[in-house]
Amino acid sequence: MYTEVLATRAVIAGRRTYEHADRWQGDHHDGVPVFVLTHDVPDDPPPGSVRYVTDVRECAAQARAAAGDGDVMVHGAGAAQALLRAGQLDELELHVVPVLLGQGRRLFDDLPAEHIELDPVRRLTTPQVEELTQHVTHLRYRIRRP
Amino acid sequence: MSKTVLHMSMSVDGFIAGPNAAPGNGLGDEGHRLHEWFLPDADAAHRRDLDHLAGVNREVMDEVMATGAVVVGRRTFELADGWGGDHHGGVPIFVLSRRHPDPELQWPGVTYVSDVTAAMNMAKDVAGDKDVLVHGARTAQLALAAGVLDELQIHLVPVLIGQGEPLFEDMPPDHIELELLRAADGPGVTHLRYRVRTEG
Image (cartoon, rainbow over all chains, first blue to last red):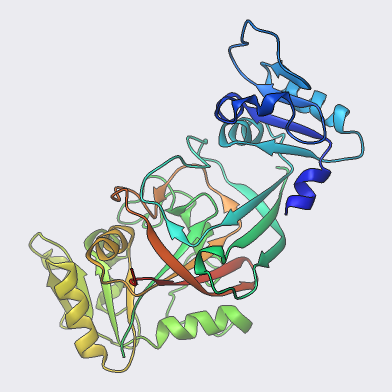
């Protein structure tokens, strides 16, 4: 999983995730371009390889162009939902952890009542491990275009 | 020993029915999409038309049909029109509800119980060696909170439906650890089976 993340050549992140991560000190990984999707551009200039974009389609286009032949990593529920609504999310990979949290922040929230079909690409489950909390199921889906 | 096992078909975004679920529209708008993995035709009665299933989808449905009792929430029971008093095999049904039973939804094999722990105990008693099928989001939430749910089986359907009835809501902020017992892919669905961990 980590290898795939590190192989991406651009990042789209939501503002909330970006700030929670202390802006990754301007470098998410390998100095690849980071496009932060935000309604409200900060006054101070973006650090390192970060740039701010307010329009989701513009953000997707810039990130794809910057990534060239490589993939764009999408980081954060806010960015994921925005890209999904704009029809700009190609794949999603869920790391399903064997716990019920009870309360917290949802990945999918406030989407319109429309069906978006997913095509399973891959399911990986970590091998039987002693520490049950480490027994994670990774579900990868391609998002079908309408 | 009899285990209480929740079975729910769920979209990847966590819904077990579409919006506007009501009697006559039990799974909500477009909700039948969540049951397509075992009921391709919206009008098929679940207990009669399972012969077309094969592989792991068939195995899972066989497990459902092998249970010796059902514990179901009042809302789910009403949305399903009480399954005509018989979910499968004529096994006893315990409906979790604090209100008086609806006279239209009473049958010899159906008992209304107001407490979730009592419902599970009664169901396990009649099920004998067989497991108890648990169905319904609210019942799942109450059973988890009371510590009387042994396993969860989530039949994960590869679709995002956007709006609907979530499986998990109104839960206290306490972590409930699970042990993955099985992850298996069938046509149109991924089956995830978990044991609820009660050890400290």
